Image (cartoon, rainbow, N blue to C red; front, side, top):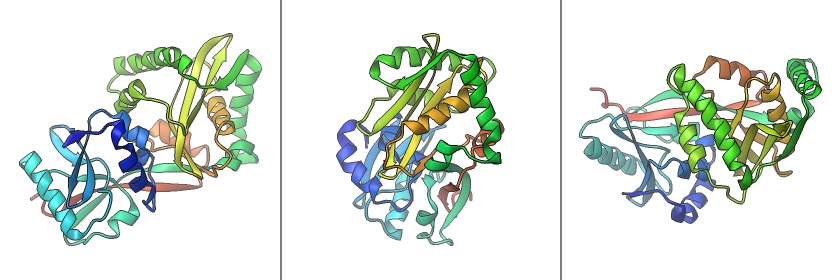
Length: 287
């Protein structure tokens, strides 16, 4: 078992591209940015492991050629690492669990990615987007703003904005998406990544960074805004769509972190679909 590094990109990336369904977490820079991910191989399958709350799990389903025997060996390996039966395979898709024997494995639905149509988000036409248009119009009317592509020179200002957000969240309780903090601190721009920054009177007040999950589908990796500017969240999300590569039809905006306010925000953008995340354990794991 070794830590996942950039050196494994040429190994992992082709296998990720073969997956019939792709979740937000399957984007290689997202996997790499979590410095707690380890790589190993079992029966020819490539596995990515993570240890949280003193338990080793597979972060995503095994990559490569797998059989029911391979799955059994993977769970035996997790038992050895954990010295118990608590290990699981996280972030599984519907197509993955269809291959499993329901008598041997238990499946739990955890959350889902929100999928959006790029053209619809660009046009924001019709009554269903009137609230979003009003927020955008308010921000544009009351602020002297600029929008520009993200560049490495913007990092320090983005980092300052992000850490201010995180400190405020931590003072009010646990930060739900703490992994995002870790991810942004370690994020490096790959060739297929893109983003924008928004400034008001020259001061950076928001940023949004994304990448290509597959040729026709983008993801928004991370976005943060200064909450004191009314309408800024809607404005920066709309602007983000204007900087997505032309080949993209769909945008995967990740899950809602089990946050009711984030769920309501994502729903008002009218997703065209969802992709479920499942956790898989052996049926006897809790006995």
